[in-house]
Length: 237
Image (cartoon, rainbow, N blue to C red; front, side, top):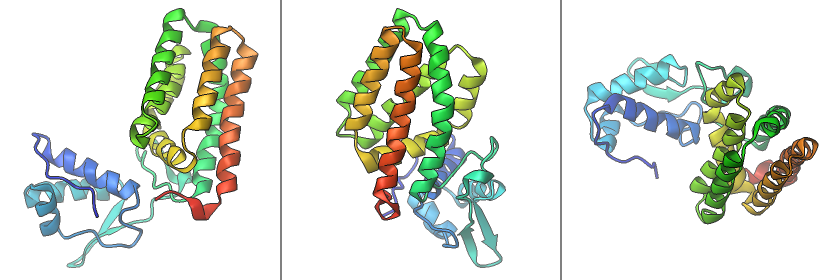
């Protein structure tokens, strides 16, 4: 069942585009599959055909869909991580190896980021991380809310680094990280993540840069190992 609701907003074209993009990212329609007709999409969203066409054109410009003369709109291949850039920040994460590739990147970047953050962190920063951690604890029954809090925790560490490039890059790939985080939580649950996030806060409180870096690296490496144990058959849908 497609998770589409009628839209009530002034920015109709943008909202339809965002909703369709989300569906494509989640793999609701597979590569080569035909999207619902313009008439069907109009009924689903409760908008005009002009609005739907504009949204589809935007998706086509990004290379996510293609049209065939008299044949409708079809999903194009866009799942390769290697093809992602800042102008095409969308990815359909389809297998555990995609998650591992993202985590390998995070292990390198976030170890250095937390080391830099340790040098600049303030008591107020610690309190902000503790508040986010509490949000994670409070949302363990809600995968979406929990994964959003998890991502917010790591983004906050990037902000604490006070390095504008690190913060900017994190923002540019936020959409990829968000999708990956949700899939990781769905696949592995929340217990291991909560443990490591608590350990990270403790290390930051103690002012131990080496420990902070080691805990962050161990956290991401442990996640990679658990995903490898799951195997491709267990990938969340």
